Amino acid sequence: MVQSAAELSLFLKARRDALAPEDVGLPGGINRRRVRGLRREEVAQLAGVSVDYYTRIEQGRGGAVSDEVLQALARALVLSADERRYLRNLAGNAVRRSTRAARPAEPCTPPEVPRQTVRPELRALLHAMAGVPAAVLGRGLDILAWNPMMGRLWPGLGDLTEAELNLPRLLFTDPGTAALHADADLLRAEVVARLRADTGRDPEEPRLCAVVTGLQRTSALFRELWEAREVKEAPHGAHRLRHPQVGELTLYFEKLPLPADPGRFLLVYAPEPGSVSEERLRLLAAGQPA
Image 1: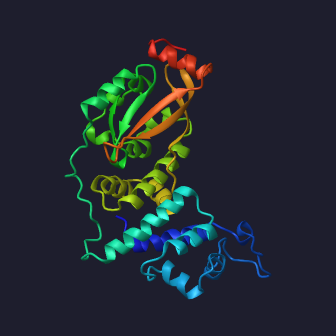
Image 2: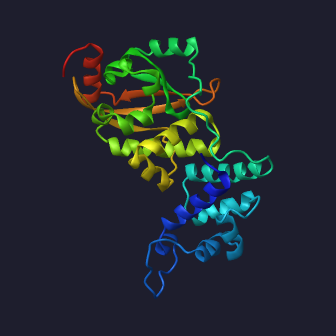
Image 3: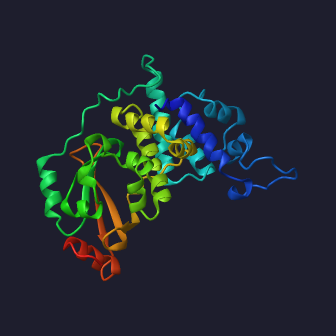
């Protein structure tokens, strides 16, 4: 799915293309540019490396890149904290891969990837969180388990098959999921950016690979967002939902890593205290219309 040396090259180019000289304090030049983006020599200048060396890095011929150079490139390209982590992961993966025997270009093996499991203790925790919607998500953003409040917030969740219980798949292929989320386009971009970050950590993880390659085949919008190479973890924030029973809700979310369960995290929604959304969530818990 992701060949780290090639992806390092494409990621650097994508971030270079996303910047204009004025974004990084450089003069725009006398001649008008045909396209937006920094030139390689400008990135090299900002990072304090030679143009030849930067070119070799961007072309995947740079070998092992030191942490100092990676930090300099991150500063030059104005990378976010998530993008910096992704860059370091790609560089490390490329070096590790170069020391191993060559592997097939597409390492995932769908559909034989076994379903991820959830410990009984986690299921008990979910059900103890009676007042707020909560769920456990796994590799590839599979939806593995949820409590009754999440089932009320997301109508029809319990009717889906195991194969359908995948957040990216639902967002890109299921109209009902898109209708539930008031900012569906923003959420799709958020989810793709999270998948991109995950591939930096483990580019050959089978379930992650299966989800990404499957959506690349079936969704043009997913392919477009994937090729943009945006990287963002989004561990917290707010989502707007349009619920058919109680109307619109704005809920804070937190994604809490589960250290004993690698690749899984707890997603919890909560309303702002005293808000309309809090009242509507209370009505939803009681099974009443707004």
